[in-house]
Image 1 (cartoon, rainbow, N blue to C red):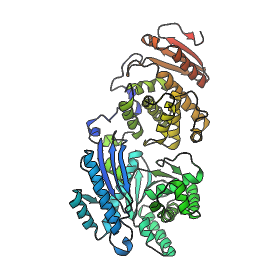
Image 2 (tube, rainbow, N blue to C red; image 1 turned 90 degrees about the vertical axis):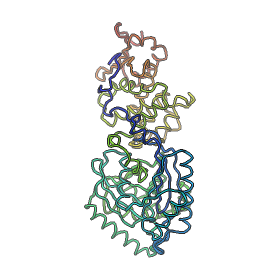
Image 3 (cartoon, rainbow, N blue to C red; image 1 turned 90 degrees about the horizontal axis):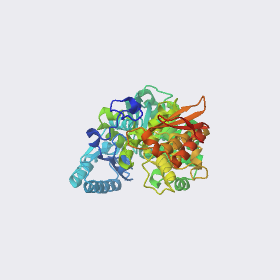
Image 4 (cartoon, one colour; image 1 turned 135 degrees about the vertical axis):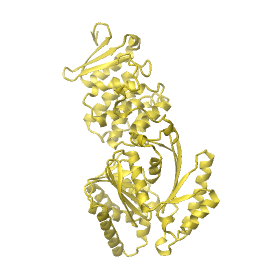
Length: 523
């Protein structure tokens, strides 16, 4: 590949294929507005950017409580109805001001079941021109599961989506939605059952029925979707002193979350919600959600539990994607979009990827995708002040809205990018987060960062390989081979960065200009 331009058909695109964010089908999804009218909250999300891994251009919710008291009255809560209508008016006005294409609005259990649900929809249509589509429980389960697929293509397991008035289950296998079931296990409805004994008996019998309807599946991964589940996960983080607060992809064992549910039951809820930053209206529903989750875990016996911040709204976006876009890696597509938008030399990330890969000859697919992501992101924060770039890139990797990343992978990616700009990580404000991966992983991330730091000095054209690395772990040697045209790029700073990389590998380094005699690094 030395000095040659990769062709569009060349295998150097790797396992991820060519970028699709600039495809017309993807551009058509650049701005998609969705309103979700739930039993507890009303939210508008406007998605923006790379369609496969969309950024949240706008995201706002109101805790309206439409479904509060419905068990007794059969009607929407009057105060909640007024708040929901007011919120929808605001959302429609904002979308119009932003020039967003027509909004898509869906309503779930409360509007679906209330006797005045049709009247509420008519009010919304008359006052805003927005038509609300009411979806049944099976469709709600399907869309929630599709939201999970937006973040995890090829997922398998059980999706459990809890809303204010209902709970849905959906089976995922090989990246496809299978059987779906719905129930009335929402916290708002459970709160209306005043007898604790009757409430618990109802939860137990309903979960037992769901278990039978879903084919008595056990031992799967349990994906939790919904605000009440996220609140429980946030409390789990607080109980454990967990250093990261990103809820998406937060993983728990059944044993650990059972401890957290006991912790919630033994705590002062007002004091706990203050420490965890949970709203009062949400915290009031958490005890009911705890009892449901305990029964779900007892019956389905999941192997592990993962929080998904993606649900119905993301599922609606996924619905509009062509299949070839659905199958793409959300992490890689998001990073490609970031590079195209913010890097000084878009396209160089691919060249840099091939430059560093000789150091990771035995990397599996998951490692390769992290390396590719790091290379694509290596220059997107160049506008930050030089003294803080290493902090900015670490923060972006560990906190940004990126799909398909476990928390440990976020830290690996952040550490690699940190070392793209800094030789040291000791003494930084990220010390706690480094504990999420072991020392060997930290060292690999450092090697990747130092390699990117060197490669960033050797750019000529985005698609031209100016140099390549040759690394032998057996002989403990590292060689940098420069194209003759790239020789002027290799100055004092580049030499220092090469030495730093060799030191991180514990290798003896040599530099050679193609066609010239090999010389030791210290000559």
